[in-house]
Image (cartoon, rainbow, N blue to C red; front, side, top):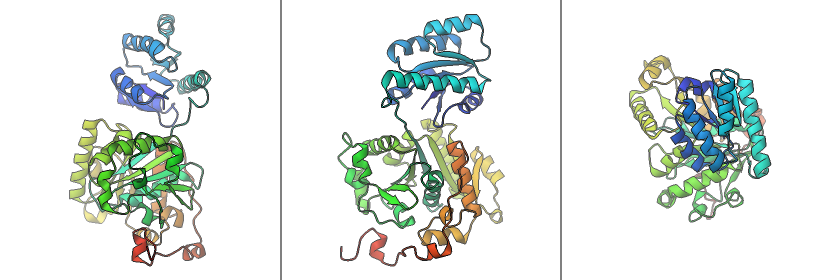
Length: 399
């Protein structure tokens, strides 16, 4: 994923619009180096217009010798002969006007072509994005948001999407989608150093809408055996095979959740219109700021958004200091579709809640997301029902 070095948030947002999906912004060259240390498949670094020329030139010289497969592109206020000569001599791949998105996009594309030529197609492998759905408060509809968001992103197979259930004690992703996995993340314990995509795919459960699920363990006591190192390995491995990895998390900053947040490209925060939840979300945002997690890549979902409770989105935005990405109103249809094992975006793609989820998916994907084809009433009626308590916990009769 391309990285932009630029301390000005407005400039970062402007530059990212011309970059491929998954491009990332960092404020300085120190963070850039930390990013490159963790992402050996990076192929281009773009230096923004407010980065001092001396700093950019020095970084170009360092990249030329230490990371020759990584191209450096300078996006500057104005291009002159002296600046161009100095930058190219230092090893910059290109110098483009910061206000010319087409030129920047072309420079990044050429950098990718060069990277492919130098390292081969396998060296330029596609890496997907991790989308972590989080709330510090339980019972706010986090799992429902995660599942419906994943289905919206998948567009019935248009994109490869995997849902990872990291609520390791009481994960509900599988039962929400009416799946009964034979494997879960538990079977990956002990594979922190050896797990590969082929092995991991054997632990996934397929949903009918071209979605894959890595289920949570069936027993809460397994949670402590799932190490942060394993979580990191799982997410980084899934990146190699999926366009999006949507992670449903526990409502706390436990170690496994923090690891997921460290790996995330997009963070979806779920809140409801009650003071205790908003207080907890405010504290969570301060924690994310302190840890420098997904700055500029956070999306606030206001669930069960009903003005009758005395709070509106304007007050929520004032309290939390960030805009509301989408609002989802209270609806009995959401609960009914969840109980039927057919998430709302599939059951009723034209429902206002489905439209809100698709708007969120479009925001994350950076391109319009088409609604899935809704099931007919007959198709919904023949979907398997959950009528056995033992199956609710992933066990068959007689097991």
